[in-house]
Length: 262
Length: 262
Image 1 (cartoon, rainbow over the protein chains, first blue to last red):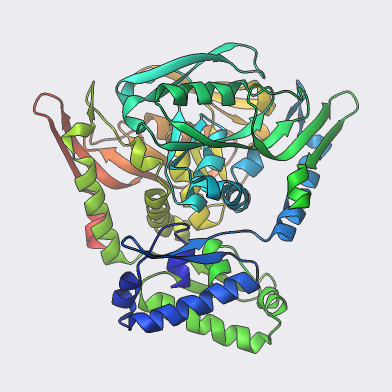
Image 2 (spheres, one colour; image 1 turned 60 degrees about the horizontal axis):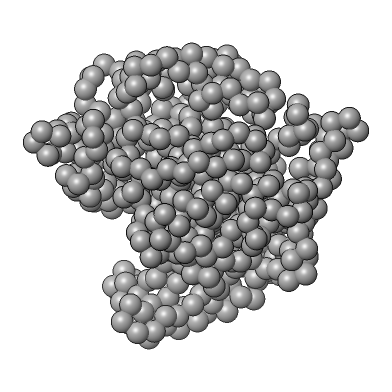
């Protein structure tokens, strides 16, 4: 039962499902759920939530222990501050971590825990680097992902496109979503790997407006300290990048304040 | 313990890890592992493997029940055969499923189970649509992902690039990998969402050759029936696409033979 619940975060399973599968009484299933819940909570491994009513049942919430979380993000900062990660042009090499399921899983759980209460119906990101983080955040939330394309791809049917300026490249870019990918009136969580000026995030907000979709939140793995005023007003980042100095061969990166406090 | 093992497929945990965490004797941990293993096997939910020796411990293998697997792929085919999925140009709309963690998780487990014995060190794919499947396959295998770029991106440092012809577009394309992303002499599992002529997969094989990396296998979600002879000789697909007919408003898609047989 633990295997099934933990491998399907935020998906509701009914007592009936389990009592059928394991051929046991619902009361036994109930008792077992209580035991699993206590154990998960005791070791800070997550929580089980009971949902009453017609669509009722139980679901697993992969909440990370807050103290553990601060430790983890701190270690991640240390790893990323290795001067060998400085790329020509003052970029930071982080693709290895952003494509490592072990890290993705943890990062996704932390972001999901932050936005669980804002009840997003889906996660949206823009190709390409944001996709892995978006997938794992959506996995922890138990909802689907939609990836906006950077150019109009012909294979997806009718598209809605907008032009935007990404602060990192300072070039005009196009972002598009297939019309069939999104349901009007739903709620979206915007997830990306990196935010500098917030141009890409604002592009996604504008694109979502075309679909009459509400923004449940904006979460990124790393945001730069400068510019302090971003093009979107509300966002959550796990880490803050203060400086990448090619000349002094130094990276300064720290956990965001809320990570340490909560 | 089940939560920890199942949330970290194919990652080795030592008895010491668990006996520290739960403050219990190694013999108790051992007994509990045996109980978990029996339960997982009984309900076809996976397996636990004990590894002896210095780096020894226990790891979770998310093997899917074979009968369940055939049922699942069959249902997936039915969903995908909905004529509303036909896109202009005879393409098949499947982005919604390929970005849905529930399906990705299952597809990733099935592909991972097929290639577990060929012991890949990492999973490789090419942007963009292949990334989600690659991430979830790597998650089930407990190894990292490397995503080849379709154009030379400046932010990743020195690149190795090759030109190839993708059969679906019939255009010359460029595929590149940052030099630092890959270790010489390791083994790669090539994963993609779709294969028509096999040009993209062959491109990846050639690119890997530049890095002196062995190919542990090639796995795709859907391969087309035609052309029967692909540009790569050995590949595994979950489904075979026989036909997308815009004129007759019909899709013919079926599970690959090995899915039903095994």
